[in-house]
Length: 331
Image (cartoon, rainbow, N blue to C red):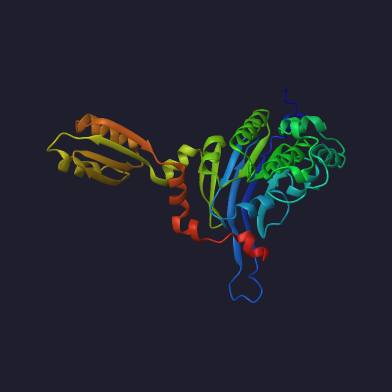
């Protein structure tokens, strides 16, 4: 199917999203002696049109609160948020931004097509109903009642509704929750086709492999701050560098280990018989030393996995123990 995104193509030259010194605080819960909750703590971020950006972070990191400010659902305590050079609410009203959230908004007694048609009627101009149904992979379910749709199918319906104003920016909160593997793959194929046409996609997910496979860029948030921002490879490298392993000649291991430890950026050197495993920021320098000066063989260079990088940059204990901030505030 040919992609025709009139509003997507008409970009203004401004960043899709620009956050400057963004801060959001909440008062302590009633009856609590705690101080205010600082959900977002000075976030600076610029996202260009056409990027596919994943927001990652442990529960309570500030991901959802940040996206809420991008959508104009809540106002910053200080700092600023702009979407295509406008205030977020202005961009939403203009149809430049849509969101796919995890909950809410579906009438169970309507069919899929009736739901899309009803929401389409609220826009002055919208993408044709059958087109968004097709793009969301709901063609065979168009006459099914919402109450008979699975959780993943309902999430695809929310996606169809988000496409109606032909937005230049899509904000997705756990967009593939409840989808099976085939539906998830089809969903991301659609997202990348849209991004190629100029649409910007920003999504929060807890599927590390999803961010690894589908995002052009990862923004990692912890404690209300951005702790890493880059490609998957850059995030991995920043977290733990690369591991370089090689086998050394018998009798030379001890002296070789001393030389390896003296290389700038080397974090650890582990001996496994005549094989050494080196963790370093500059894997090229270590590899050159091992092969050219230390007569190493069987060289192997491995980049840390995204899960390891995630735990290193956010803190493993915090990832396991931090409560979901939004859930706590809603109580």
